[in-house]
Length: 127
Image (cartoon, rainbow, N blue to C red):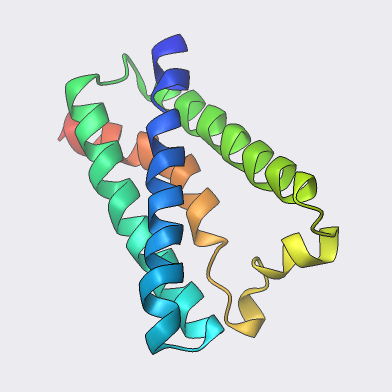
């Protein structure tokens, strides 16, 4: 599992670069909500490509291991997101606002995909 822990760190870099793309590109063309929505969708695409590549090269030994990889990546993702957000001085309501789907926020899809993708890719590879 150590290798899968280490393989989470490039996802952090991908997310940071995606955020830069949003800040330097999408925000100039769209309002805040639309820029965040587009950024969420592009990050889902980038994560899909990365996770597919990684799990094709280093496939989990079992469905159980794939599920645990998803849990590990979910915990790391949420710990970083909330830990770094709090470090930046953001309040809990500010941090949780991105998860409010009824207000058009799609960010909830990111941790869900990070958690489910390893198992789904494992199952696809078994076909």
